[in-house]
Length: 354
Image (tube, helix red, strand yellow):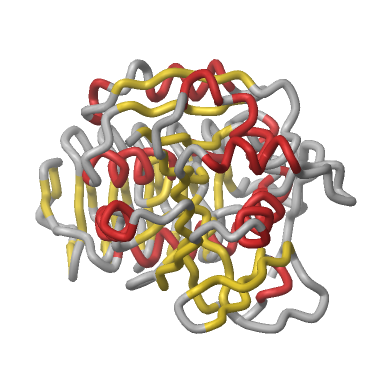
């Protein structure tokens, strides 16, 4: 069995971060989202992985390389335009051949991994397998309608969903999917929808099985979902202090401080992670915060946030909360009088002052 990982989307819902960074490489608990999927694939015993890439291919190829660090053999498949999940399968035929494969959306996170899902598919010898999760807003997802132990119908983002079972971004197919993706037509969005391809399999009497996700699942396409995924992963953090913490600092609950990090006269209340080479001084770091490598936080308070690498946050008079701060960013508060706000804001940015 092979794996096909989709990492070609533009990430418009995460701008301005994704103007300069692939959405699949945004860190959650200081590790790129894409890496969690690759590790889950390796844990399922799969070795050969094709990663479908687009405009951000150089960044993704630089981060993943040949896959050796994950125990994988990685190939890259260029998708000129993001024309749908089924289109990604269509252009990947040469890599996939006639072998069964897992298709994994690179911005999805699954607590339970995919090993059980793969084992069930191999046991049942189905033509396709889908993962489902109950959601509060099914109209935002592909939705499954079930009949007994079979999938009856799939609808992409229905206005009036008939169930709350959303398609998780992980699928398994045998070679019959290649016939299906060639048979369907583009949707009203101009894309070849994987839901239409699976529906074609159902309509032609093929065996499509489903499993309901154990534990949590997150599609990290929006800021609030990234922060929620960060919270869920940090909530299971193994505490360890590898950096330096002075006597005037206080570390409470589950906190991981990486090698080379320095904490001075500060309080860190976990779960939280502090990246290698980061300095925390005269500050408070609250729960569910991930601060990446080589950052500087001085005279500031932060909680429930993701701070990306090489950023500086200094002399902030109000607590920074529920925030996603991009790489190499500077946030500070001047003591000059009269007081004023001074902002340099890029395209598609969002600033909320509270």
